[in-house]
Image 1 (cartoon, one colour):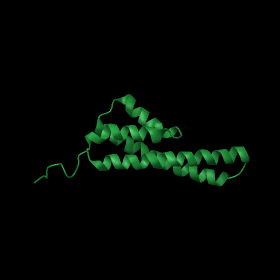
Image 2: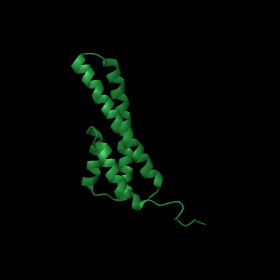
Image 3: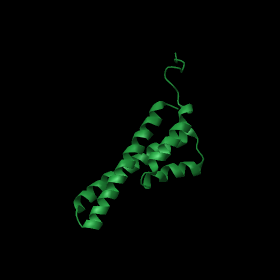
Image 4: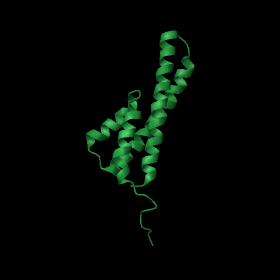
Length: 110
């Protein structure tokens, strides 16, 4: 597996987790204090698009790492639980890093 597959998953896991926390904050202000309705709408739309990208990258990583369906489902769902993606990302990286081809140790193709 190429390192770029893991890197793009990691980036999107963090982006999705941060955007979900921002969205939760916006929802608190929208429903708790009756302010920021337009901002909440924009953040929710951005989070939705970024979450779809996260799903694609996580699915790609899961296919290349040959995860069972249950593990793949847990990684995909972790993007919907605030702060869960941070913890799941760390665990995934520890498990997948040994599968990553290192460009320096891989033999050159002629």
